[in-house]
Length: 595
Image (tube, rainbow, N blue to C red; front, side):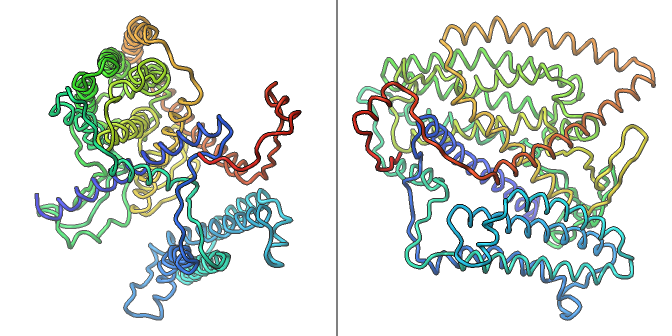
């Protein structure tokens, strides 16, 4: 392994740790925000940074300026010899991408402008005109323009593609520049408070934990008390090593020699349906182990040691009870969690996570072939992460805070961060096993191919780097959605009693996992021995599920955008007897509450 290969591993490690740490902080904010919504208060929004308006304008203007400069480079290539000239094979991709991006940035900017003008009031004649426009109408118009743009770029003759690509690149750059300049002009003069929707609160909390006193009980085991949070955080960090977060990237070069720095910019322009790299293949995975999911179970199983050790070493009866609860709960649900996936292993024919994701890309997502296993695994996984409704090891109403009741400062922060990193990792694992991983419906190494069996309806070849980037974004996007779903559990489901948790694991999930395994084994054997007609029918059924996912995702995206752009009207009403009595007595205090 040379220095270049070590560099690639370090980059992948930084990408995953950065994403998991950021999502853990966002998860903490989301939990607190949902608690505030339940209690009808402002939520985590006190942390604020006051910056001079000129600095804020620079911060706002910098990203669109950089993106505009990148988009402008192909447009200037005919006039500046130092820039790489736009060639014909690359020009087709450039034309399509820049056209769609220009339309996307355009309607998004106008919809945001209309929403801000309606909410905060217009400051000029242009905003007055947009304030009278429903932002949803702008979205619908933008979708129509996307379709027109795709049709228009498809009929441009090959002789004019290079010129058209340069024009659309310049148009995209202009849209970025105009959006950035106008946004910067709306920044008010003077000190500008920056809250980032309350996300700075998580940063403030982390800083506070660094500075707080590290309290250790007088009769505690100081060594074990210090080791416990490290052991609890360890599995959350090392298990991410085997997660495939994107398709493989092909760097052109001599396959007989190790990859070096000269290969970094030599990305293969296109790739066939089957990944065949004539150079060096770079997997979007830190370590592609043959034992994949078994490594995850082995490393995740060490987390029980940290919880049990923390409970025992703290010299506190509530801590000891929490540690015992955590140990028994995690060991119990590990059995059901592992057995619920054995049927999935039979279908995929592998325990390597990258092979599982590839199988789902070529066939269908795991949730369609093992829907029952998904719900069993999800229940066991939530119990393993000790989150509501399975948070008995730290039940505040029973044992104060459980196994980390005697922890403070940075050690408590390690437990806290470990829990939320586990939340994000469990979401990523669910995505990898049941939701296609980095794969998207009909997106393959060579581009988009919509087909049902042997009938091809649509084909669109794409640049290899674009396919890899889309797969990376798809994996992280799916993980965010699944993490949001698990956060939503916390403020939706009530906590179980401890005896109910243990009964659910041993008498419900375990027998159901065994039954699912036996049924899956029979069905897999029947499918393997079936004739060609049955296999063709299964192939078509798999393609139909891909179409269902694609249509459902598109409909969900449209519904989400329309819901976000819908004007919000807030109305307060009196619901309880206490509220009516307070109103009759003259009302309550009206100053805003802060979390």
